Image (tube, rainbow over all chains, first blue to last red; front, side):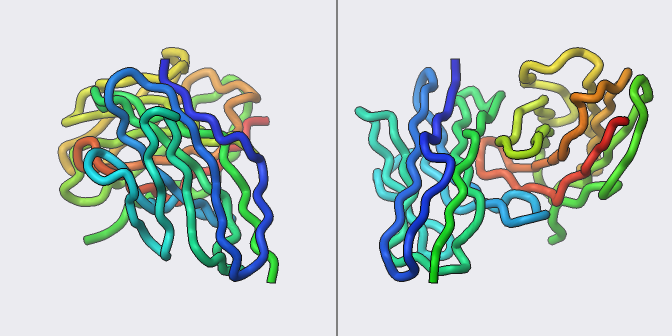
Length: 113
Length: 111
């Protein structure tokens, strides 16, 4: 069965420091992996995706993510955090049949000035 | 090109009633999905429609049903509302298996 795990409820980082938000997944076949961000009282916004190709994918607002097949992970990273990055981040996996998308429970990122 | 819109923004219903939520997908998108997001949780997949037919469903009972129309709009219907149905309902559209574009959601409160 498909599943997504985000092991950290909250990540705290100082502005200017690198950040990592962790995600591991389980899915049969080749995964379609996504990261979304949710700001208060707003819908989810797409950040980046991995479907095939290079394991390091770059997305919006300076975010990137590394796909690691052996560890079934897709961690979100940013070299230098901004206070405005503070939000709720969701990892999601879509099965190759494309019939279902499963989201993780979310990780709240707090960037301190 | 307009984004995904949802109506209404907020809705209050009583237990046992029925509700219809509406979504207008981004033009050109052939796939629409509905999610339930309880407070403090991630979105839970309800079902997905592709070219007006349901082609994927999560662990939700049959009282959750939907429709997708040729003009990119979609509906989520919930019958016999229960208190646990109180949540933010999100609609998302996409072109095939690509990234989804989400609407702002409808917050449903069941009393």
